[in-house]
Image (cartoon, each protein chain N blue to C red):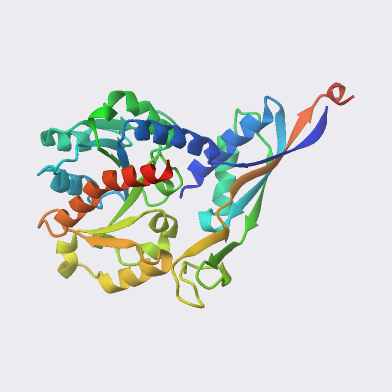
Length: 231
Length: 117
């Protein structure tokens, strides 16, 4: 027996990226744009989805893939919207994964009729770190931060705040009750992710919800344009 | 915090590369921007590698500095804290030169001497 050094030079996330690429190819074939919705637990992702998807999106057929460690509480909450909702639980493995990875999303695809969708919103497991590492084959990523979490979050979780195209500042109706300086938040965010688009929302009062719906509704057309340009 | 997920991805990569051979050492390159806490990663690597071909392997973590470059003015700089706007021209069109690595660079495997005639 002797020891041999083997050069590998492989990114540890390559295996995930390969599956994410396969997901992306399936999504492209079905002409469905995919948005990865990420946040800390309790930032209001599901309530926002209820507010955004409730009135329906003009001409855009939306569906939701709900990622949670356990249970179907979030999917149940969206059931009244009468859109395709699939629950994906991550507790099958090592004590319950804290994020969705490409393979988990892939395993849920048979339950979704992609052809019947223009937009699939994947609500990731609430977590401010791991979801940033694992691509799932999405076209766009949204990071939701609530004012109750504190203004310094971009500086503490730069990985997450850099890995998105849109930052939604939610629960803006609580601004008067919490010590959250929106200007400071924007300043910190700008240091971490200069020029990233920001929408402020309150799922309760409805502030900013139309703007977020418009942003989401524009993703499929934007992706088709990009895909068309690439051919 | 995400070191467990990262450790899992690393061990999967090492196991694939080892092709069934026992692994005695692993050399990793970990970029500063990945926000990995070395001690925490080491802790999880030890746990996740149990009952795999890399159980008991020595995992060496080589830290890679984060360097950015501004596409606007060509300035490049090392990032030590969360500051991704160009310090020279305040531009936002910035590319990452290094610091995003999460790479299995090499492994040391045990082979039967007969194989290397």
